[in-house]
Image 1 (cartoon, protein in one colour):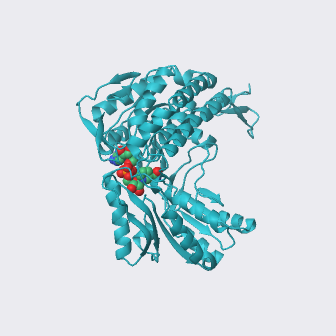
Image 2 (cartoon, protein in one colour; image 1 turned 90 degrees about the vertical axis):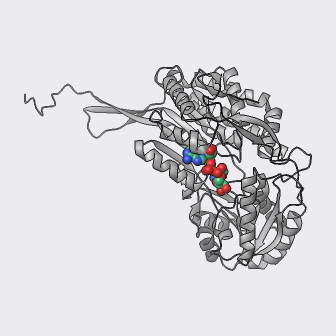
Image 3 (cartoon, rainbow, N blue to C red; image 1 turned 90 degrees about the horizontal axis):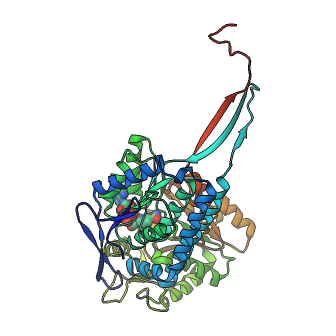
Length: 489
Ligand code: NAD
């Protein structure tokens, strides 16, 4: 485990010498300390990225040469999959099989963007102009120095979603992981070093958002900000970016609906509702936390759902068979329990769940709330825990209206035996990610991002690469005829 930052290809101690504790959420034990950066460390990281972009080889290399390094990073992650997954469990709490899945996906993300980097070579688009005296071509170039600020729910995977496309495009980057889960991001520094990434192309600093995160987004040497996290922090970053007109992409929260029609298979509905909200302890921006069930299926589905939710094995993520680990930290634990208490006080029924029976650790049981009023906090706000609100509906129109009645628009899901109806509802959802007959499966190839207050821009796929590219037109005068504006022939 690292105790220093990765800046300019070297490991360096924090200038002020401060550290932050790393707490295992399953045991509440402090098992490590990470360095806490100040504005001075942030400045050193940005200067290093700036120099690597302005004078270094990375943006000037061919896409194919960058792809070779990205593939070596992917392999470096894969070679260390077991120990990176274990670190992720210690830091974040998630069950080990989920962590292994995340680390494998992170490696796959570097491979995918290696492929797109190679495709950038020689990419030139010709534009046909209405004036034969001119020709024009369009090329795409790296956007510059990017800052990535990421959350704690998928620590290494969220880093990969930003670092891989940025590096593929030829950008240089400063990565600031969440102060709650920085261990695997720091290990990424070792992996990129071994993969031969030139110094300064990726810099990694850890510490508090308000301190080092704010210093990074305020830094005049930064061209682009890529953020995933909460809406208030995203809005704050957007205001900071506006001052210097920096480009910004935001992936924020959600309160995503899952509409289940009565012609659905009840077992499949139970499975996907649970995967949609209990996977990763519900700490998923796209979690389908509002479930709408057609009235005919509502009572039997609720009964099956409660029965299955109560069977989920809760425990330390390292224990075999665990399907639900602790929440990431004490703050989130108290926050989620507070949401449940206030929901019940406001009239909701706790069908199952609440505080889990564990002496230690931040465990919240899979929680199902019914009778939640449409204007109640639990129906409207992102809880970011294993808490689902479920209610009946009568018509397709009502389901669509209720699904879209939210300030968010990240994801939405629909299940029905009638494909034409599913397609109709999918088309009517105001959300960037729509699942039919499932909830949550995510592929690196497909665009990821939200409508409304769920964010700006798209990550993943070729859309994720576009985030880190500038577009340049080059227009040439090819006619020998005089222009004849000032110099009259
Ligand atoms: P947050 O938005 O405060 O933090 C996310 C990242 O932003 C962290 O790396 C943090 O250090 C950084 N940050 C915070 N303040 C900053 C600032 N002023 N300048 C620059 N960077 C700053 O989220 P959180 O406190 O970790 O979690 C709070 C809530 O956010 C959760 O309860 C949940 O609702 C939501 N959340 C959403 C996602 C998502 O993927 N959409 C992920 C995590 C949390």
